[in-house]
Image (cartoon, rainbow, N blue to C red; front, side):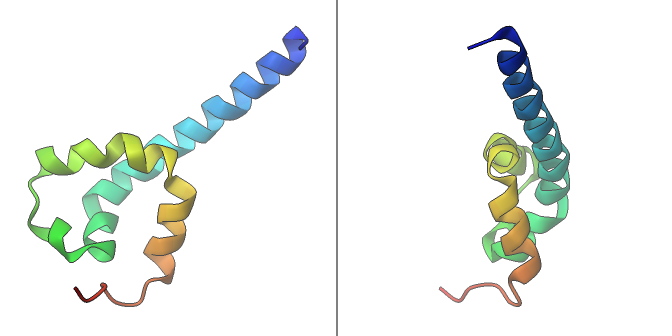
Length: 74
């Protein structure tokens, strides 16, 4: 692997994670309660625990956030 290829991969991953972190902060504050009703009563400190997962899985969570019409019934 050349240095240019490694730098390109690192740049793409950095961009992906920066977008994910920006999404995760908004998701923790508003989106989590939209997808999961149990998140409505969670304290902020507990919601911050989902930031790493939301930052990595942000495309899936973004899709679920905007396509889900009502919370799932358990």
